[in-house]
Image 1 (cartoon, one colour):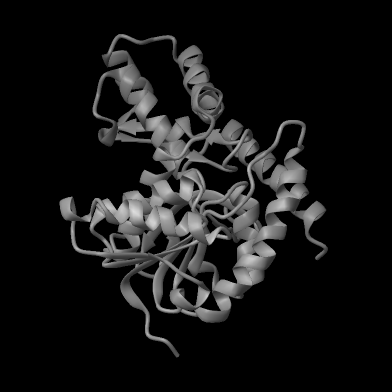
Image 2: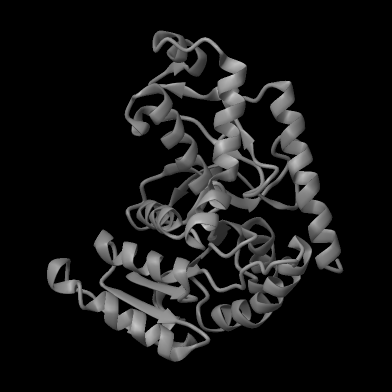
Length: 317
């Protein structure tokens, strides 16, 4: 058995998200070695060279394009490989296409690497996390998706702009599907322990329902707005990948809303969906209970039902 190198990462897929993630990981100083893999070998080599040229201003590191055999000892394997949605293409079409890509990629990873942690970033992330678990044979704690980590960051950012307070002092989650059925968990949101509505009133905001609806919609539509303006989103998710990798490599036990297989969590089982979880050196090390009101509970179950329907249409068993 190959011994895992805790300072080595692999990025599978060198499109916008993969290359931005590789750049963020280089800047983080977490790893001393990183291998990039892409179906287009020249693309991987170009990204590796480009990122490497910034190393004199960062920390010593080996960054190179490689093949699957080069990831046998990688501690974290970030999977961004997947196709984007084309005009006129349904979400189900995209799901089927990307599950097809995963059927060729994931077995290649698990063939050479048995002990690493697989972080799924490709979309639709919840479905593809489920697919990766099914195709890899990895234990559930070691294959999970970035989920609503970015949505939660967007939520905190928008709240911080609204309230004029440091986003790091805001404790709030977006849960459920990373997509249109995501849920803003307002009932548990707080600013340094002060319930969100109380803090809003301290800042002179009293139209709670109106503000909550607007901010939740802005979070949900953030990606659409960015794609409309620049064609793709990649910096925010790259920072999310960096944060998740920090939690793993440093064994931080950080609580993040990642997408993982659920077991009777708010009545949800057998699908991958985003809920707060403790992230450390073993991957997902435990789920964190979150208080939800009745409307949020209902919305979460509806989100789960949406995902279950897609899984049933894509997978035979």
